[in-house]
Image (cartoon, rainbow, N blue to C red; front, side, top):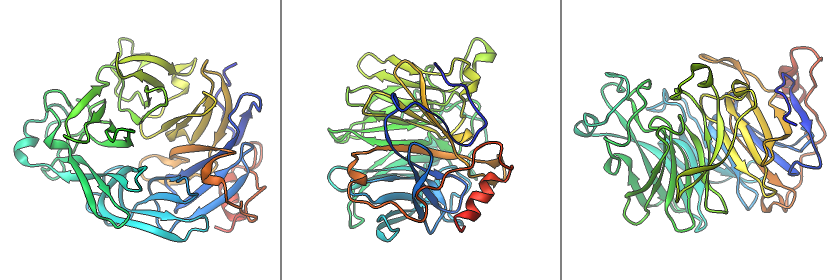
Length: 389
């Protein structure tokens, strides 16, 4: 069965026989720096109160530490979504063990197997290259300047050992900005994934592309997505070599207008460039997040999906059956989105995960459950008060 969408909060559905058991991590996107870990029934088992609001989200490292991208008000590109200024690694108790400061940080990060960290950042483009970029709304550069994505690999000591500048390798005739988007950014990379051979996979929102960068040369060796996906997020390589990504669906090219407003998850064979698996709701418009969002292939073959703009995390089987669903109960006021329970991404960690191997869950939050629907409308505010925030 495909479980219908709900307005309830907390865990709304859980099939114990089919879901992948573990703990789910999420970061309220408009909050104060709270990161929550819940069990399969929605009980809070751990909580981090970070010193800064999120630039995007946090994820757990194999050593159990939390790596978290921070947003600091007053940065030079505060008006860009995904803007950040500091990357913090904290231990289970919230103590800072490592940090990297850069006011041009953006969207995502990846702790590499060699101990280094790959980050996305922005860099201003030369005017002569900006003029060659195709697409976008005319005259919408930021104060006359277009910003390009860049990558840096940094050591634990903060030394830059590899750098990639997007505008030096992208092709203005191929990497075309969506005609309905502005020209302030080319192309707004929102996820970074380092492959086993060192090459780097990026998801690029405004050009509707996934690309693989040759680590040795900096050349773009693989490019896919235009005409297939619309403003994608969270691209990653699976164990079978295929690429999984969240296809947001914003500004989608479509023959029938009523089909345009939908999101889906796609798994692509990079050799054939064919979609070999996809998930979308039986009622397409029931599943839609025009920005952010993510997906994670779980060890049992299921897929965890974060529908960012609805604050909804759910798990589906390979056949598309929903076997677990959670709706975030924390709502915050946003100047453009109103009162929203937005989260950028979510991650599931199995019961045997290395990240949770030597940890103790908080006695202060363990066992506390999100109020169910039917209780008074101040659910989220009451929950925050009850936990002392």
